Every structure is written in C-alpha cells, then in structure tokens.
Image 1 (cartoon, rainbow, N blue to C red):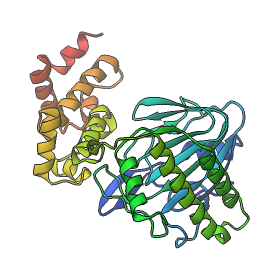
Image 2 (cartoon, helix red, strand yellow):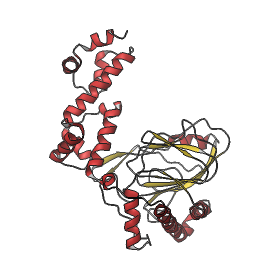
Image 3 (spheres, rainbow, N blue to C red):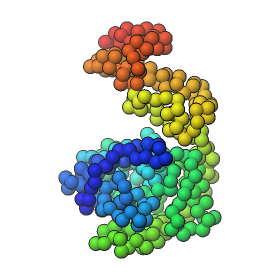
Image 4 (spheres, one colour):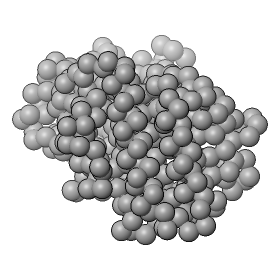
Length: 340
C-alpha cells in the first residue's frame, strides 16, 4: 500500500495547535520496500483515504509487516486520539514518555493523546504490528472523553472503560486471544478491494475490540487514580516537556500562550505552576532556558553566545547576559571559558 498524502505536522482545534505524527519514517520505509503497510485513514495519517463520512472518528487503522532487520524507527510523536496497538508477531521496544517497555508477540499497547511515544530503539524490530487510532476528542488529561455515536457499549460499561483508560497511564498489557482475533478480523477489512463496503463490519469489530479491552483492564484490577485526569496533570506534563525541550524553549512564549496550551486562564495556570515548581510561569521559563544555555555553552563551541541565546528564546543578547550572570555568577563567555 503506497497511498500517501502531503502531511502537515500541526493540526488545529478550537484555535489551539497540536503537534502530530507525520509518519515520515513509515512512508520512507514503504517506498523503499523495507516494509509492507496496509491502512485506512482520515486526515494526516498514511494509508488509503476513507470517505469523510465513514467512521470519521477513526483517524487511522491498519497494520505493517516488517521482515528482517530494519534500519529505521518511528519518530517520537503523539496522536490525535487514543492509539491501541497489537504486536502480533516478532518483538519491539515501545518508549513512552522516556520509559522503555518490551513488546514481545501478543503484546497490547495503549497510548493516550498526551503521551509522547515511539516504537523502535532506535530501529523497528521484525514482526506484524496492528494499530487503530480512535479520536475521543481529547488532547489533554483533564478533558472529557466523547466516544463515537456508533459505540454500542452500555453507558455503564463505557463510563467504566473511560475511567480505566483515563485513570492510569500504563501503556503495555498482555493481549488475550479475543483481542488478537479482533485485530486479525480488522486486517481483513483493511486489505479488502473496496474497504468502504465493510464499514458496518469495521464498526462492529471496533466495538468488539473495546469490549475485549474493557474485560482485559477489568482483569488487571486497576484502581483508577484521579490524579491522571486532573488539571494539575495537564500542567505538569506541559511544564515537564517545556523544561526538557530546547525547541519548545526557543518559541516566543507568553504567560497567555502557556496558559492557553493547557486550556487555562492566566491566574489558574500561574497557581498550578507555583504549586508544581515554586516559580511563576515566566520565571520557570527563564530558569529552564538558562539551564539549557549553560549546557550548550559547555558542549557547543560552534555557535556564538548570541546564537545560543536566540536559539533558546531570549529576546536580546544583553538581557541573556544579565540573566545568566545573575543566575550563575559569571558572564556566558566566562562560563564557556571554564570548559574549553
């Protein structure tokens, strides 16, 4: 399957922007004959496009076959919906929010839209990997999930499934025979000559997948933790990523912009930032930029002090120099000279 579209790396909802998976490594691997990929898609995912009105909540569904050693891996990314994957055969390594999880055959993985993840460390392993990405209209932990109208689970069961998925962020589980059989059934619809003729069968199979998933999670005796679906969790995830990412630190953040990224007003965001970091949002931003600048000055001799300052979002070299000296007790140039 080589149905690919030009893919943006940002999608927008309610005037907010989110980074998504552009699937470039998969595209390249398919085009070079390293893997076989079969998928049905809406929006920005690789595969055969589905009619807009047919199961629009399914962002992507499909599987890939990787045979032999690979020299590529998936980029770290987030999805527009909850992603449920099955490593049917072979073995892979899943990395979620920096933690590594082995995925031997018959392993199920579940990642929520806010969880940064990738498969391959660094390369994809041989085997068959199935996936489905179901958009439940959330981008942050504290938002309310909205399941498709064609979801047939009872209200009680659907509420329980939502609580189990929102109330824990563990990504890897052992798949039972029912889940494996359902993914295999979905694969037959994905590879059909005219997949649109199987729309009803796909919806029924997805419902069976959700029932099987609910039964699996019930069997694990999970105690949902409200912390994982709180506003505090949303702010915590944003601040953690901001503090670790030079690319994000280089963006022209304002207090309003950081608050909007978490779906909050200025006052509420500032309150949670103080609660988590004991700093105001702007002070946390500047502190993180200075820490990264200090590390860059030690390790990067190719760029000037001014270039490093601008890369990390400082508006002027003079302001950067004053802030750096106030924090570290010496100028950026003197700091760099210590490590040459």
